[in-house]
Amino acid sequence: DIQMTQSPSTLSASVGDRVTITCRASQSISGCLAWYQQKPGKAPKLLIYQASILESGVPSRFSGSGSGTEFILTISSLQPDDFATYYCQQCIIHGTFGPGTKVDIK
Amino acid sequence: EVQLVESGGGLVQPGGSLRLSCAASGFTFSDYWMSWVRQAPGKGLEWVANLRRDGGAEFYVDSVKGRFIVSRDNAKNSLYLQMNNLRAEDTAVYYCARGITPAAAPPFQHWGQGTLVSVSS
Image (cartoon, rainbow over all chains, first blue to last red; front, side, top):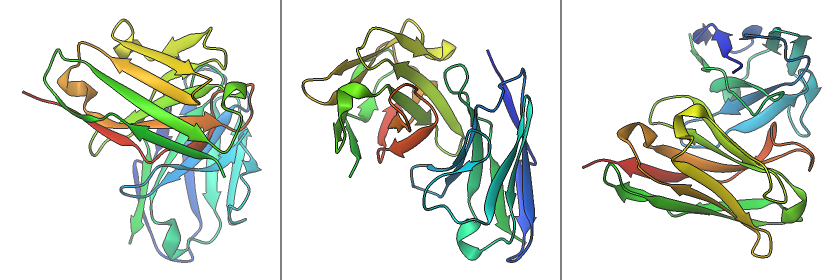
């Protein structure tokens, strides 16, 4: 089974900050990696797929990069609506999620 | 507009059974792989199961193998999750999800609102 890890588990930041979240896979998943945003009480929202393709309607301040086993989600300038929990998911075998990164207000 | 609406959640005793349903609309259901994802209270997302569009191939997370069965009725545009021998650790919100393209399960572009399953005596 492919295991996913994320760092950090919690990130405190301010509006306007540049934020990066790292996701690692236990084996190579090529570029088969997605990022989701989830707010309390809501279903997750797809942000990025195939490591770097922005889902339609997602602001361009979100970007993704990486391949193989290491991936990065970047928010170029954090906005009030971005305080949430972010999950990565590998899609090469079934669909294991990472444990999540909570972005909260500093 | 794609819509996924789960139902069937509730309170069940350990060892009991429950059947979840997901009603799909706004797309050609029979063209797409479908999936279940769950989230225990205060915890992260956990992929549970994927089901091929014809129902001919199914995949499960190890923790539910032999207890859960995913199925579909393409004529009724519905996905199901039969959950047997439920345990306290199965307590979670269960989401129905659909991928971006017909040929693959994740990544999940569309999600239902979720249905809560509580396993407790």
